[in-house]
Length: 139
Image: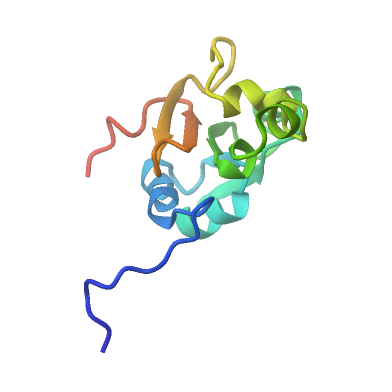
């Protein structure tokens, strides 16, 4: 028999299942999210999630024209994109157009996801959302 106080090991970074699963509480099953690790959002939060496009313009196009059946209502970024070398990986790398989002140095004016919160562990993950879902969602 396994003791009830035994904790399951987590693979951090980038996986913190409890924090990812919280997205399933904040978002409805028919809503669409985007992430740098969409497989984890689909698995742990049981929500539709697409890979972050390489360009912000592509994200906006997908969102504005609802090519996915609805707008993208959340952007979940993790150490997959944020734990690299600042200049080489983040500023000049694959997600360079998202560097200000990854570094939490973006004004969201004009971007459809205006609400922002940092998530576990120690704020290394960030969630941009269409609205504040974490303060207003009742338990």
